[in-house]
Length: 337
Image 1 (cartoon, rainbow, N blue to C red):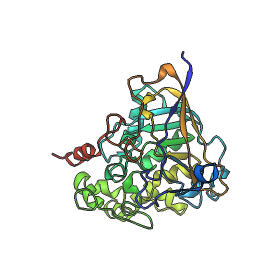
Image 2: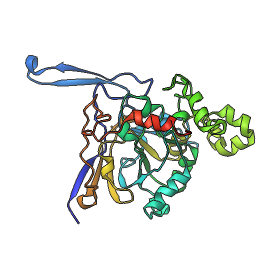
Image 3: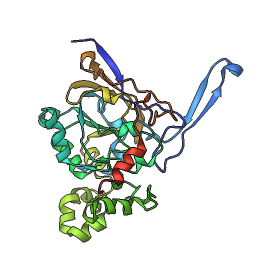
Image 4: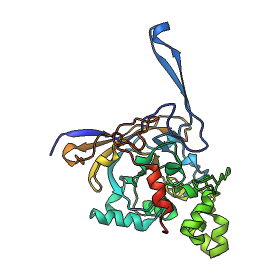
């Protein structure tokens, strides 16, 4: 066995960091400068759900499944986001919905019994972290999870789920589509809305997974209640970020925008995941530094160190170990050809 090394799993933070579609731009200013005062003191104003960050239950819900008020950051255990961990590599098509079947397949690919995941941190590598940028490819068209994945995490008793994409849920389960208060229904790459695009690519029934009223129209109220009723029973809109709520409502916390050198961590190997949010009283989440602590002999040696060259992201450059968002979207929109 080799020595223990640390691998950064965090996207760099800056004023130009990519951010979720309706989030404010970080403002970084200074109070003191070297030239004037002999010291450098800076201040930051931004949404705490920017870049690589943690979610607490109170971020998305009023009540957890046991009836208690949803907990704030300071009410979670100090090690809620930290502990023994494993990476699962998800084989999924662009814009695909990750279900329990994908998670089962990811475990089977590395001969991992999912019952051994109890009280562990599960890191999902979908490849989306390579597209991290201010782009439709990363935000609109990410692969992501839904209610079945959320139930899978609950079933196997994981303690935390860290995802390498824009959110704990598929983008169509978020306000980018027709869920939640803002219901943006954003304009897609083709000039149509992302709802129109998704329907054309995947069909009406697939789209209904993300729309409460369409699901009821197509499958009926009884089927909707069977799938989303436990969320509705605690006051949650079933198709609005159901994986967030299924996880957080059962005390399983989440990390979004996992990145850095994630590809250096092989799927299936055990390592320590270190992640600590601010000790923020009544916080709904927190930016955090995520780091893998792992035996150096287990690291993927053929993966180069990732650099972040463009806007802090390293988007689409060989040096930055990034992928092309354009190629990703071309693959998506050519799926039926």
